[in-house]
Amino acid sequence: MKKLMIATAALCAAVGANALESANVVGYSQTDYRQRYTLVVPEFDKVGETGIDIQTIKPVNVDMEDYGEGDINIQTFTDLANKSVQYFWYDADVSETGESGWHNNTGDELAEKTFTKGEGFMLYMPVAGGALNVSGEVNLDEVTVPCRQKYTLMGNIRPVAVNIQDIIPVGIDMDDFGEGDINIQTFTDLANKSEQYFWYDAGVSETGESGWHNNTGDELAEKTFAPAEGFMLYMPTTGGSLKYKAVAL
Image 1 (cartoon, rainbow, N blue to C red):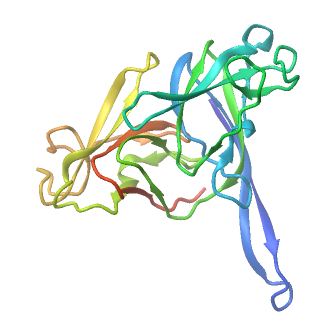
Image 2 (image 1 turned 180 degrees about the vertical axis):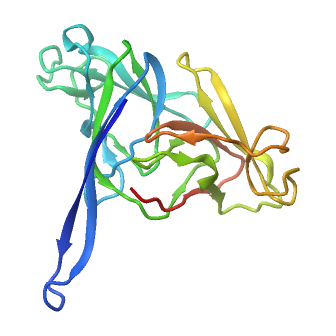
Image 3 (image 1 turned 45 degrees about the vertical axis):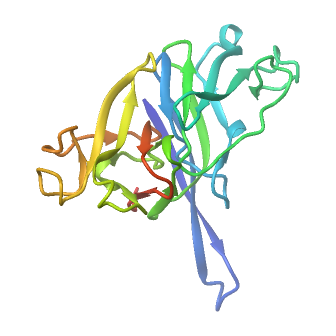
């Protein structure tokens, strides 16, 4: 279950008679996650900035007397899909820092990590019904997020559901990379590959359309990503990005 609270905070400037110059959409979400592993991407940014501090992502609805000693953890991946850095949740009464938050594995140092726009992670939740509470600013405009060569954890950066066909690879030569080389995969709760979707350009797909397809390119994929739902992207070359179409709440 996902709870979403959104508000509009108007930012006024002394232009004319205090004309409205811009507005921020801010809010928070609380998303229930399954037991064991889930790919997640923050759907909020720090207000006025791009990206979000790890310490603003908080596990809730879990008995911290049982699960406050590093059992809940987050990990990032390398470009070869291996574990990179891992962060562990320690509650204030068990951490050596005396604070609740994401720590190193021994709980004696608070983590310093900012997730860039579109950067995902793998969450390990030891019990069913646990949730993450995330707050910040929402970007509803069209956004282009750079991704590295090979593997990158990314996902749906919006607080609303998004069709896979509204997430488009750009910045690469489709004459070379339009035949399924670019692909997206989702994971099971045991961190194994679940579903895989392949980008075929119109000139090479059997559907005659550019978009995410099954592996043979003869059928367009039907997939909707829930808010904050993550995936792993494979990009065969440097310089590629994912373009997220603008959305409305």
